[in-house]
Amino acid sequence: MNPSDGPRFDSRSDAAKSLHSVRLEPEKCVGCTTCIKKCPTEAIRVRKGRARIIDERCIDCGECIRTCPHGAKKAVSDPLSLIAGYRRTIAIPAPALYAQFDERWSIDRLLSGLLALGFDEVFEVAEAAEIVTAATQELMKRADLPRPLISSACPAVVKLVQLRYPSLIPHLVPLLPPVEVAARIAKERLHGGEEGVGAFLVSPCAGKVTTARAPVGYERSALDGVIGIKDLYVPLRGVLGTAPERALSRAGRAGVEWARTEGEADALGERRSISVDGIAAVIGVLEALENEKLNDVAYIEALACPAGCVGGPLTVENPYIARNRLRNRAEALPPRAARAPYEAPSLAELAWTRPPAARRALALDPDMLKAMIMMEEMDLLASSLPGLDCGSCGAPSCQALAEDVVRGLASPTDCIFKLRENVRELAGKLLALEEIKPPGLDKE
Amino acid sequence: MKYRFTVPGDDFTMAGKASAEVKRILGQLGIDPTAVKRASVAMYEAEINMVIHAGGGVVEADITPERIMLTLRDEGPGIPDIELAMTEGYSTAPEWIRELGFGAGMGLPNMKRNADNLEIESEVGRGTTVRLLIRLDGSAPAAAERPGGGAVRGGSV
Image (cartoon, rainbow over all chains, first blue to last red):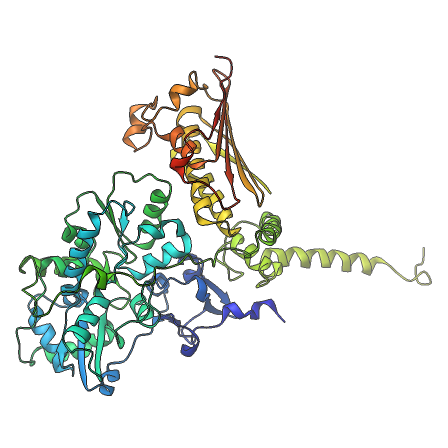
């Protein structure tokens, strides 16, 4: 078998194969090396002229979607038509939605627009975010939890910690993310868990598509679907002018501001906090934390997307324009949500039920002795590679190619320089052979 | 298996690169995350010290399934009083280093806390060698439970 056909490089264009949301549109991919170089977990390889994603390593951060110059990487979310299969439907809009539209459209009008698109009700993620903030404030008083606590609201950050910083897992805030809290309140508190009621996240985030199917920290999501903001944007624009405006918005500034970097830390009121966005900067902060350099920090709000959730791959507006709009909108809101017509969930109900485990996808082999032998082979091969990290072999770096080779997923001659070396050697041998004549013909 | 890294003493932006590299290797070997963290924190502190005080040096990492041995050698000014240097909060780092968030006098204590054994050999004017041992038998005691876990040896002062 050609190692390049290895099972771990299955193309994600086949939707059924993967739980992850990030997919490739094969007809748009030209097989360039942009995404493989930008992926923070080295989860992408180019094979047969197409980018392939290694599922075990993908953290759904959306970096490849953002950087692909050909628009070939896509986050697959659910279509609006999905809601037709439910007796009663609840839209769960993330506050990043409010930042996609000009401030002349009020939040009430945006929410009313969702009803005009066919939803029966709305429940704002921002309202649930305030509940999560209050619960986090309780946790911050407890001495038995490590410091700093790391927000677990961003699914890409949680997965990054599982994969690259497993020693930091105990630092993650052991609470459900606001989207899940919103779905549970809407379905369980406000509808008593009735059959036929569906909750649909209106999402800026590709990672939430994945966690709705395969949650991290809890068993089963109450969400019945995740619809990308970008898929709703045009139809929603279309109805904003005519939708009858109803007083639907309840969330306050604290919850709405969660959609931008620093919003969550501001809501928490914790001054000894670090707010960091963009996956590369997040890695820098987690690295410093793991090196025990952040001893005076009580809380880390880490978000994979630039400017926070407003910069999510399922949004349409520029992240920084969106952030400014969100800030402007939030200023006009009361500090906190109006009194809730339901009993707020207790800390126990908000707590994780299945804490995330370390993901060992980076280890060469579960057996350390085998891993050491592979590592030696890998180092030897890596030192013979040119070190240009050109990406022509389909791996992000020479080191990564060496790793793929010892894992049996690539061949050393996938390196064009190695191949050229081999060809030159072969040519030399051919030349030498050509010089040799049968003794009968070898005249003086 | 053995690795050798040169730590440049003139480029602060490169400080910590060697320990990050060792961390990557340990992760790929599938070593328990707690041990990886202890090894990388201890080595990071030692590496930073090497850059701040000794103008760089050489790090050797020797990894077996039983233990990680990290040896950091420099030809810096040496440590006149190791006992004093081990005191939490004691620091000889210049002001600009402190402004960068380093030199808080926690380097050696942090090394001691994270390693199963810490040995320091130092001679004033000649240099310092730090040996950090991390055991991989899976029964590493919690940091607080091994306060005396390190031999400290001074050279001729």
